[in-house]
Length: 506
Image 1 (cartoon, rainbow, N blue to C red):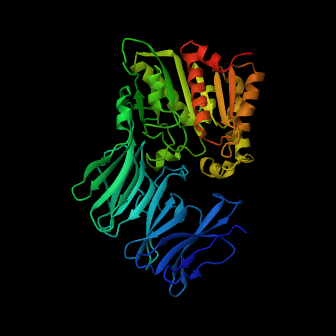
Image 2 (image 1 turned 135 degrees about the vertical axis):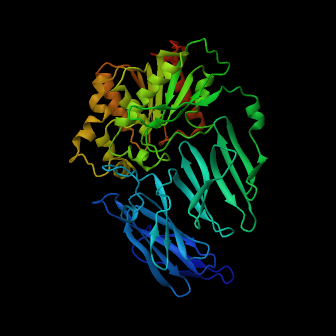
Image 3 (image 1 turned 135 degrees about the horizontal axis):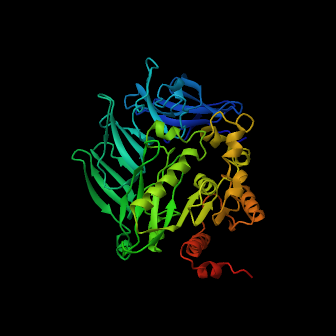
């Protein structure tokens, strides 16, 4: 009863015609420029085989109702759009699509299916070219422009979100020189070489621009937060990278407190996502580094192994790892950062992460006692229980734990789970979780809290009423953020007054 189909509706006559039928929902991918053809897709659930869902995509001539299948039952190719002349299609997928023709990974690696690639199919021959095989950024969105026949890609490019233009003629990529570090939208005019875009950077909020595509120049047209930001004093931000023990460059950023004095010793907060998406260079967010810095903390944001946008080989380090290389990167990075920055008080370092990063918070404490305080929001404590429950469990694990299941790889599901190593934890941990989280069920925090209480470890647990994976209600979000700040103040500044004011022992 919840199936949906595609209809053609005539505005002139008010009549509609059903174009797709059957036992499966169909999704409209694109309409050709002459409005004579559409591309649609359908999916099949295949719970006995990773990635548990397969996509079939077809082209339809809506004048003759003739259907031409483009591909059938590929779990890693999921969307297609027409070229301007409708002779080719641009396909979105991941490395294992079409038999792995786009893979660029080391022997023994499994591709990170969240690292998105692009392909072009010639409709006359059905030949497919993996155009981003050797292109490191991950594709977020794309548009094939009829004005210049170029393809415009919005990409996760390390911790930036950049726009690239692809020339199908000479098969080259060119990054557009836009003015923001994170491009949130980019829209081109149909009949003129201009576009509008908006974005943010590490030290400013949303700004909008008019972009001259011929001269490659941006003109600011809106800066709604300028006056508000002019009243704030932000600390200095700079990039800081290091080479890990495997010889791989790990990038990151350092946020300094306002009125920074290098002769002082500052506590530090380390922030990471730790999973497949890098921590973006955005000004706002649930864990804004500038806010941490404003409270007197040096804030180190790290992009550890496994994140997409750094190339397929780097992203593949996420698969079947669950913290192995990622934790080493964070530990090595913190150690090197402290060594190079004597203004950090190495006895007062905290860490924070959410979702997979919440898992990383728990996991890190089983590997090191270098942190004086830790915060895990919506973290995974047991990989096996998370795999079997929740909205994302087994499907996310199809990418993060490819071909690994509790029955064929118990070492991964048990030994890599923080819950089964809870006795190794010494760091005071604050666990926070939305009470109705469907992405990572709240039981993941409940069982870790129970374990740490039984072990007599310093732990607190905040359940946030009526909230899902993120904390959205404004009042509850303020209280939640204040609780995190109070926790760090208690353990990194030796000042319990804020925490005790929020949560008295009586």
